[in-house]
Image (cartoon, rainbow, N blue to C red; front, side):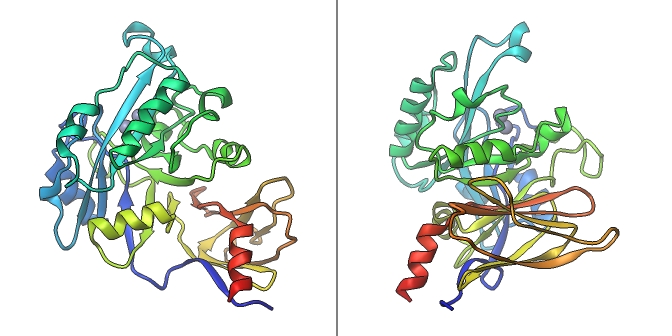
Length: 329
Ligand SMILES: [Zn+2]
Ligand SMILES: [Zn+2]
């Protein structure tokens, strides 16, 4: 038996985050301040402000109970918007600023992309420049974007993709995209996944079509500061969810152990087929599962589904890296 390695644990500080949000800076209905208050009331500590095409750092909104991440959502489209918009393929990429103090002037100037260029090589060159300015890049809602594998597999420079987008789910039931995440992982992308709201707040909180509070990311960080949250994003110290909680994912010897809030199903997605899984008896729930690792999994990522068909997803953990760590100890 090797030592226990924690892939995820709820023992450290955890912060609830919405990493995709629109305000009156673009086409959202609420002001940045109203968003802060609304999300704080619902138990969130972090919101990434990602208005369309316009980067605003919003540093004034950060205080000891709340971190406002500066960001922007950039779109790069097949054709000019208009009547054909509903049939147009679009890259939507969220950029999160890792350090708003740095190169502020260049960032304000550079965020304007060539919006009518849907070529993957162009998108990659844009991401590369944004990475150099200090932004983390997240690939948004591929299903809504009408993208297929040839559109997203060539992307480079991403730190994450959206596995769930709540606004897209409400618009067309195309919010949950686990297949794209596995396709990207299997094609060599070592990226994380996030669940987001992409809220525009056309409907008030409590309305069944309100696009807030449907997809969130739980970030484990040393403290609630801008720098600590960014470091945890870079290191993948987070999971994403529509409801269920992931409390522990660990490896001891050749056993993978998972603990969750009460759910109906715990599945482990791996590079291939035959996913290890544990399901509760009808009408019952379970909160833990143990699986022997065979060593050929490639990566493991945990999916838990609750009785309301809401999913929690861990990031993918590439086993070689963790088993090597276990040997070192
Ligand atoms: Zn979008
Ligand atoms: Zn959006």
